[in-house]
Image (cartoon, rainbow, N blue to C red):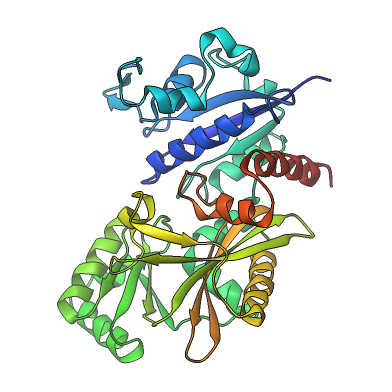
Length: 380
């Protein structure tokens, strides 16, 4: 039986470019595992930060090095290829096979035609990758792809639209306000009134977030008017749409979802950390946060979170995979939905694959199931 050719699409034009590379390295390793090597043929495609698509040696180089290409003018600048003495050499050898064993990934290193790809795995995080843009392109190509379609991806990316969908589905949430960049930058008379309204409606502490970024990029926790003004200005530099949410004292718990029309939920995990909140550095720096899987929760609460995760998955019309984040207020037993991530990270420290590992689906099998779900959705 011929191998299924998987186009691993990674990198992208967003602030989560490096996270995407880390996720792609883990997926490439899973595709070259003993379980999957005889079934899949890896065709890596790297999107530079300037939007140029690269396959062949360029894509392989980025996967092996784990580092983005540095763009100077119109030319990518290659970083040194890892050697036996370099710190990253042992890590890269775990991701892609050596030239002597390249039969496992027989097409790696060759430039490819897009028509050769049987199924795409767009492991792109953030805008221009997770927000429906690349999904629309792949849909036009009429080739199966892993993850949600245009609608699910767009709703899952835009926190304001997402919360509106959750409200329609009857899912409880923290209080929030939607803000436009024009309210912050365009009229100096409007800005103080906006801050007054936020203070009256939400109070302190509150969180200011760009509506269309992930991995906690551009997010700030604020406790005073000066901090609020600075946070709004900073968030407006990232996105035209900004959301401000009331702060709550709660445990942060997450649940992974896998499937299409009949999805299933994983065990529930909890994130604990010593920093003020779960920011970008805490998320992607080893040792900065602890993932407790499964979370120590009453069975009734865990079941409720799993049910709400499936409701959220349906509310945004997600497909394939998603990670759904919640606040659990222990004093009252209340569970509030925070957000859904339709293309969660697949790095070594990412919650999504660890949740499924604890549920009984190891990483290589998880990648296999996601590809099969993509094929299933295309044929349905």
